[in-house]
Structure formats: structure tokens, C-alpha cells
Image 1 (cartoon, helix red, strand yellow):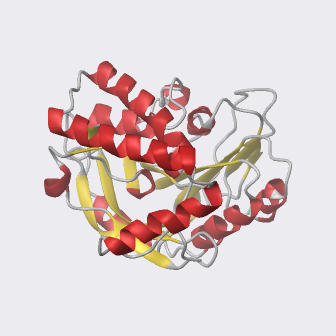
Image 2 (cartoon, helix red, strand yellow):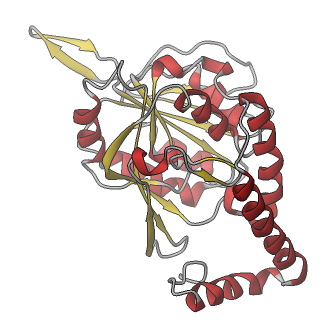
Amino acid sequence: MFEGKARDVEKAVGLHGGAQRYVSKDGEQVVSKPFFTIVTSTYNSGEDLKWTADSIRAQTFSNVQWIVADGGSSDQTLDVIRENEDIIDYWFSAKDAGIYDAWNKALVFAQGEWIQFIGAGDELHASNVLEDVQVLLQSSYPQYNIAYGRVEVVSERKRTPLFEVGKPWIFLKGQWEMGRPALPVHPEVFHHRTLINGANTFDTRFRIAGDSHLLLKHILTKDPLYLPLLVDRMPLGGLSTDPEAVFKVRKEIKLINQDLGLVAPVMHRLKYAVALAVKRLVITFVPKKLRARLIDGFRVMSGRKKIWTVK
């Protein structure tokens, strides 16, 4: 993995560099610039992080920089990080103001041509995925500054495949979902380094939808490149899919739309309002332990597969 020189961003951050990666040039060994930087934020997610580390370690493409931004974990997360220091180029552990604050701190050290953000517990889909993506991205800039593939969503416990997400841009462009224009799922996205502005990359006013804000700012002015391959395996769950977080997301989406001058179509606003009202009823009157069974029951009645009760 690639190693850069650390800068004193914050004295409270315990910063550690990883191992250098060399390439041969006319018989001499020189440090190579990474093609990819992967950023992962963690907080008390040691068991989940093992999945991510194993998938990065297995990659056939090695010109990768991995940065782990830990929010001050008190479980075994730091032990897992130290066990994988040979493939982690930078890591730090300090309190942060949320995931986007953590990502911003990590991006100070990002040196890759293309940047990917994957959560603790996510896995790169196959051992050759970065090798395949690199071939597709090699000559894609400046025509494209954002690229994305597909995500396989799996169950949290046994990693049972549930469904896939990701469509060619022609099917997403002009569509609306969740109160804003349709977007790729963030772990499947690669951002060109020209879109990264270090510690000012993500707007930290947002706690849940900051990635949507960043993507919309750029996708509204230039179409992204669709990569026809599975990039990431993502466990079902997380803050953005937590029923209690749905209403917080709605407030943030309204702010994003105001910032970017977006107005959702009337019919979409009505459908979205009805969907949120139904979710509010479920959250209010159905005990948390029964929600998954209830939702999957409705899915089965409508001809869809169970996902929330699959182990």
C-alpha cells in the first residue's frame, strides 16, 4: 500500500503510516502514486472492519491507498486496525462530529487519482474488482470525473445476497427518489481527485445526506460514467436505512434542494409524503422487534422477496 508523509492536522489524532509500495523504473525502485484511495470511517465496529480489511487485502491490484478514520472507538476496532497496518496507509483515532467530518480529516492525506468511500463492514465485491475498475477508468478523465458501478446488498449476519443496486445513468438521469434526483449508492462511486478539497470536501452541516450533497453538486453539471460491474458488497442496515433516520434525511434533503435550487415534481412530493407518513405510523405503533416481519410480510404480499428477516 502507498505511504505519504503525515501532516499535523490535529494534535488529538494519533496518526500512523502504512507500508510503502515501490515500482521499478529503469532498474530503480521509486515510490508510486496510488491510483485509488479508499476511505473508511469506523466507530466501535471492529468485527465489521475485518470484512473490509480482508476484501482489500485480497485485491489483485495493489496500487491502492487505504485510510481509516476512527471516531475514538472503545471496542476492539483499534486492535483490528493495528493487525492490518501493513495494508492501511494512514489511520487515526479521535472524536469527530460525524461521518463527514471524519472523511474530511482523512481526505487531507488522500493521494489517489480516484477516491472511494466504503463503510466498515462493506467489502470490495471480488478480488479483481479494483483491477477491472482501473482499466475502465484509465483514460476516462477529464470526460468523466465521477464513475460508479453496482452494489450487492447482503444480510448483516450471514452475508446472504439479497438484491443488487445500480443502473446505467440513462435510467437514473431525470428520475427522482427520496425527495431528490436519483443517485448512485455511495460505496459504488469513484470520485476523481479534482473533486476533492481536503478537509472542506463534505459539508458538515449534514449528518446523513452529505454524500448526496456532494454527488448532486457535480452530477448536475456533468454526467457520470457507469461501470457495468459489481463494485461493493454492502450489508443491509446503517444509519441512512434506519427507520428513525428517515425523517432526519428528509430535513437534510430539503436543505440540499434549497442549496442547489432543486424543486421536486409535485407527484413525487406527494408520493414521498405518503411513504413517510406510512413509515411514521409503523415506527410509532409497531414495536421495533416486529417491524422487520411486518415489512417483509408486505413485501411478500406485493410479490417481492423478504430482505429484512433474512439472516
